[in-house]
Image (cartoon, rainbow, N blue to C red; front, side):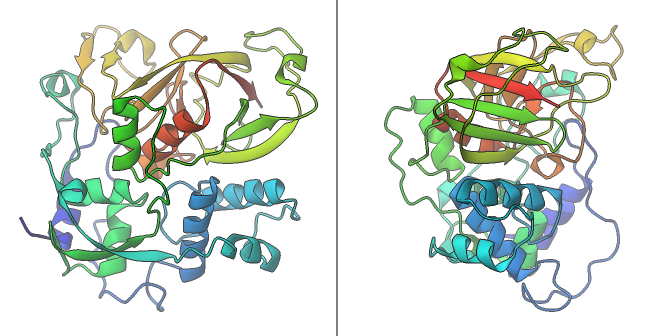
Length: 365
């Protein structure tokens, strides 16, 4: 099956989404220019940096070749981990450290069924009662699936290849080079391994001991314990306003995260992530959503990457709270959540590989 990328992009622009309207502009598209050239939305240096940061475990969220808060925070995390001056800028020492990976920015991919096979859901229902009738909350089309698989956006795929390029099995496209070095997912259960493969998550990951979620900069940082062990953390565990002492450790990974809202703020304190669920259904309970009328009926929404919690739920000891994926990766760090911690789907499944169930999470402001 062949479709013009521009047609899919326009379809995605008008499709209803689960919780947020599309951010795609209604302005007429300008003439396409090759990525990195004047007039392209993709900055070649930022694009390559995002790819390298992603591979190093310091995600900048979606790879789109644009400068922004997520890239700045990812650079700061990488610089801290490597003992470099923490500037948040793509300076010479940072660029040199990133380039040691020897990874090119983009890769030419001959698409297979793994990249573009459905089933797809289009048009995607907007109301929870209609979503509940679906069997699976899948992608809207091939372009949306491919973009998520390569940690980017549909708009970026179009910017890389041009709106006249065909997408479908057997076609070749330029994509961000997030192809894993290893697809050995030993120790993962079947669902987890399938999701890591689908989302191009490398099987080789560092192992973390605890995480720190910082409301002030919208980051989730993974640490390996050092001389001060996790058990040295003090303070009243679990209290909303409690102060905890975060133990020292080595920073090994970092992800951008959406941490709540004024109505449902991040519950500061110390918690545990006890159990993981992959491709979970979602119990839609209007009384837990400040922006939904309580008289709306509860719904059980089917699983899928376009569900409200994405591909994974890491359950916390704080009732109704968890670390989960999203159906809107481009909004991470830029919009509010209903209290939970939201990551891109590829980052949450990666986190599930890095951390074993039972890990401690410190939420700080």
